[in-house]
Length: 150
Image (cartoon, rainbow, N blue to C red; front, top):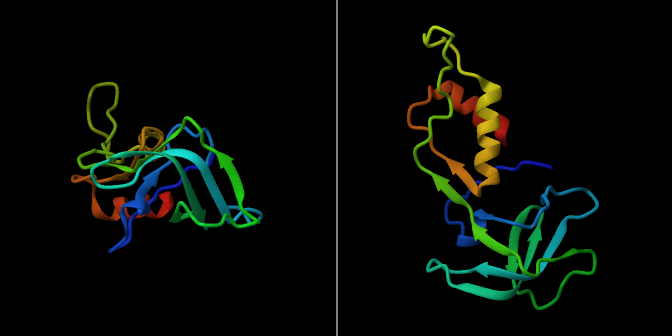
C-alpha cells in the first residue's frame, strides 16, 4: 500500500483534501493510469457534509478534477465504489509527533524516534487524518519529516 500525504493549496476547493475512506486501495498514480474514476460513491460534497449518493469522481494525476463529469475518459481506470464513502481529509490540530523517547529509568533521550513517528503518521492517515500540526516540534526536524512524507 502506498501512503500519500495530501495538502491543500491556497484557494483550493473543498475537494482538494479528500480522503478516500473504506475503498481498500491506494490511489498512487502510476504511468499506466493517470485518470481514475470512482463510480457510485456516496460523497460529502459541501461544507454542511450533506451525503450525496451515486457520485462519480474523476481523479487526474492524483488530484480530484471533477465531480459527476459529463463523460468518462476512455483511458480511465474505473472503480466501482458502491457502498463506499468519500470523506474530507481530517485535520489533527495538536499532536506531538516528535516526542523524545525515554530510557528504562524514565530519562528523556536526546533524539526522537523517527521510525515510531513515521508509524504514528501512517496510523493517523489510515484513520483519515491527512494534515497534522505538531505545535511543539523543533522546526528543523519538522521540516525534514514533512519533506520525507511528501
